[in-house]
Image (cartoon, rainbow, N blue to C red; front, side):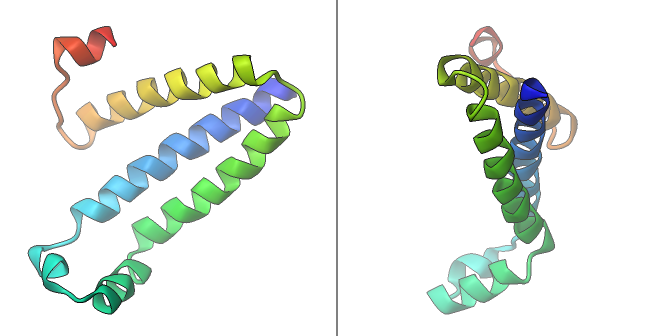
Length: 106
């Protein structure tokens, strides 16, 4: 059960990051021209951003439960490395980003 919490936190964190990128990619150049209040209103109407924030919240809850049972020196490297792996794969597949040799080796 300990690693189920950690796995869920990892999946939620990666998913939240991917949704945030999708939400940010959908913003057009008029977003940059807005005043602060206008930007906030646009962001609050962005379903990808809102769902990403929600998933970040769930991630925190699952990660907290994982940390009550798993050492931080084990949980954090798994979260970090797993997040890099998942997000890198989705970045190539969904966003058509390229990975350099340095990124792959890292």
